[in-house]
Length: 431
Ligand code: KE4
Image (tube, rainbow, N blue to C red; front, side, top):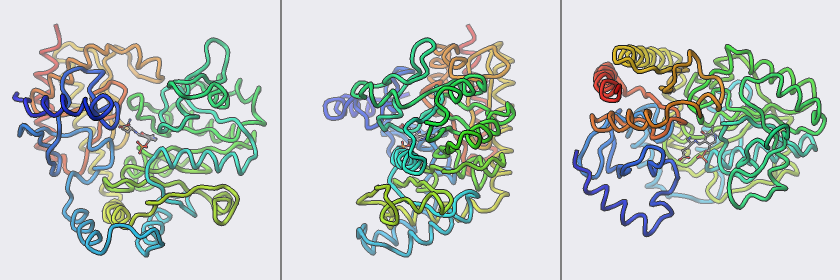
């Protein structure tokens, strides 16, 4: 496969951008090789600058659930942009999108738009602290909620439950206010609440974790447990649905599982590929947000009309539950094909899928339940599988710790072609 143009661009990019990219995972660090510089995309396909075509399972890390360059979304963006790109003033479009989000997401009565998932989460945490007047936050190991200082935190060593920085530049004092526990570990959460309970403002969780590969917190009973214990101690439950929102059901994981959070963070699909994040919840909590209340949050491009139109054209097509039955059927057919292909080649994998997101874990475990389980996967073999697929025109997420995404544009032809490529790839890496 000729990747000369990507190599040249990457060499130049590395002199201009940190690591040659604008977001670390794009640099292929955990799989090695040259990241592909993408020239264009349509439906389930992307083309790199050397003209190579790939079936895309990254989908811009989630937003492209309709498939790339959806005609209605593109037309809406073009029409809206022709009327001006940004005003810094209220527009009808943001009111329309807010109404649609409130209609689709069960626990949201009032919503605020921001420009990224990171901004949605950092704002929701400030609101939770303002509402409860408590300092501590509890998150989960392997959960990713954007790059706000207080969330770049890993579990303290040994028995310590307070956090320690997971990035240079994060002061110890910030990290100490973030507690952490393993996914699916009720005992650990009970212990933390026994010690900090009355001082915990909120628990934040991805109701379908996707940043350590796709994990299941529902059949384990973990989500109902978190809802019960936060109520018991007066802490808020925040669902970070930046990835699962509009992906696992029209109303996200909270609709699919019937567990209602106090606040919800959204991103990715809500902007249809344009920079949009959002946070929302009951009026009783959201009324604390400025200018109505004392919790400050602002943004020059929040509610940008072009981005609002992209989100509107996208969500309008996702209100139909049939869309999710199609997505789920196709994703399950793909995952079944991947399991069979791996089994035929004698390569142990555990494929986990929820809705239109899935992960192929290189492990002989029956189920993958925690971040620790993922860290123990055969990461070198994952990297070889990634490149064996890439060479065959299939573009998986370049990390074992990421979710792969299907879209409405991934039809039977794409699914069968992917399974065929995977059959060869598993055979190639079997030795
Ligand atoms: P952004 O700031 O990247 O829009 O959203 C942060 C975020 C918050 N919450 C969840 C559950 C997320 O998955 C994300 C971002 N996800 C990553 C994928 N692992 C985005 C890809 C990247 O960082 O380049």
